[in-house]
Length: 183
Ligand SMILES: Cc1cc2nc3c(=O)[nH]c(=O)nc-3n(C[C@H](O)[C@H](O)[C@H](O)COP(=O)(O)O)c2cc1C
Image: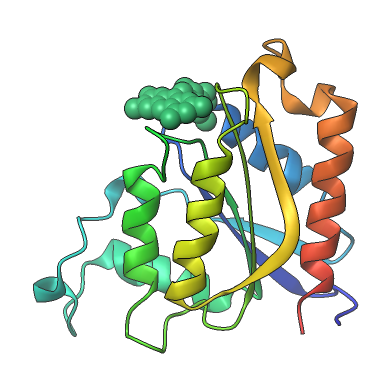
């Protein structure tokens, strides 16, 4: 366990939408960071090319280098995503694929990772969250058990999630437990 000082958590948001509820949840998580923990957002998922082994070489695109370098600097990762058609949004799955290579040496290898998010459906996108955990669990990070939060967006009444005391408390708890997992 770490005292949290000087640690960095990578933040990935699975929605590109400017008014994204998941982006707002990620803002709330960032505001909830324990003392000494910095949240570093990688906000360029929409710029990543589709994963292609032919371009995953020494001359890999700059945005991929930036993703992998940001992930390499991080001590943990927080993924905040909606559900699209019962599963992981394409931009996020694409980022998982880029982060999974080089095979066995991905930049998040062994690092603690948590997945949360919000979606319109009554289960808050839990399928996407479970599948994101499954996929990242194969890709290299260490998915931390029990750090679950799937928020039905209707429960937020159109307000920023920071105004929902239950969501804010649960997210703060998850962020604290994720930070405590940093070895
Ligand atoms: C392409 C697409 C597919 C969607 N599929 C689902 C779904 O399977 N389950 C669900 O609960 N909501 C689904 N939604 C609704 C999203 O949960 C809702 O738009 C949510 O607010 C998106 O997150 P954001 O606000 O962070 O962009 C879908 C939305 C889009 C645009």
